[in-house]
Image 1: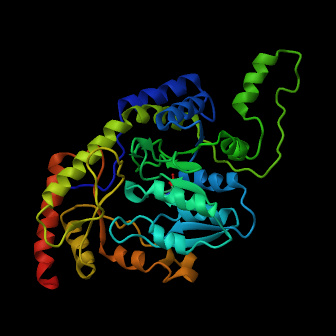
Image 2 (image 1 turned 45 degrees about the horizontal axis):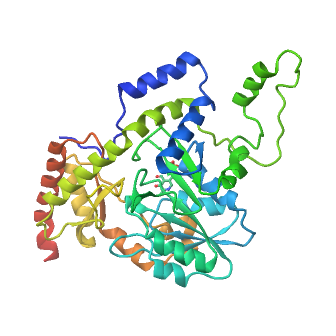
Image 3 (image 1 turned 120 degrees about the vertical axis):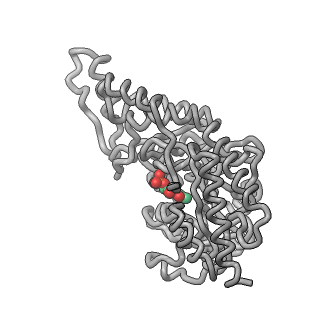
Length: 387
Ligand SMILES: Cc1ncc(COP(=O)(O)O)c(C=O)c1O
């Protein structure tokens, strides 16, 4: 049996939504993007949402919206995807890496506090894997040190703490709808903010700095009538990017949003089945302390095995046709950040124990059991090496 690692859960409803966009023949930034933004803002209970073509763009725009002074430092965990740190570099700011907690793998908030200096102005809180950063504590630290908080919610769309959706705890929240994530638009992202002015500051930046997008211009064309020869007019006041979401993506997103809670519930049920199957394992431990009460939305399920046998286990799973990955090689070990190597010792050792296993809403119980069996066989085979 082949079991792939990730698989978007899309079908007839998404196709029908795309067909509707085709019928209207307005495929770019248009009314569907607005509709999806409003639906997303309602879903997470945020006063403002901006549709973008990726979370990478959302993170870039989130840092831009804060208008931090040159020389500012941004705290970023090293246990994350590179986009979480690039947003600071895109804005010409410095990254300071924060280590992770050995148990939860989330940013170690004691380490974070130790790294704060007068130049530190912001923190990118990544809810790695879907397990939330302790936001009440982080906000208390941020308040004391006057830091802005950006939540990187690429892994946790739909997750919450105490009923309050992730992405709405900090100043700004960034979501990913890339094809493998909790929900997808093919590629896509959403920026939300508790202060709508922060979103308005970057609205033009998502469309090359143009103050009036083509959808608004064509609306003016029909509304303002035959006497207006300047319906085409727009101005560029700042450097912008081609970061907008389009109506095709938004149409898919509106359907996926309706399914999001059910897809997250299925992910949680799969994780519960994995945990059950691995309960009495000696060598294989869950990647993090997963909760199965539905409060969290987990993008990945992973395990930890002793570092000495991790690659052997991956090879054996490969032979059983089970796809795996490792999330992540810490950023401090990438050539781009080589000056920071050694800065986050926990992340720089624990990644060697980590294996990401298949998880997607349409995964069957039989597939989960197959992966568990393959893993248990691999465990039995490597056990003599670590005893
Ligand atoms: C933690 C994290 N942040 C940001 C991103 C960027 O998301 P996107 O692919 O939508 O740009 C990813 C993508 O995997 C991610 O894992």
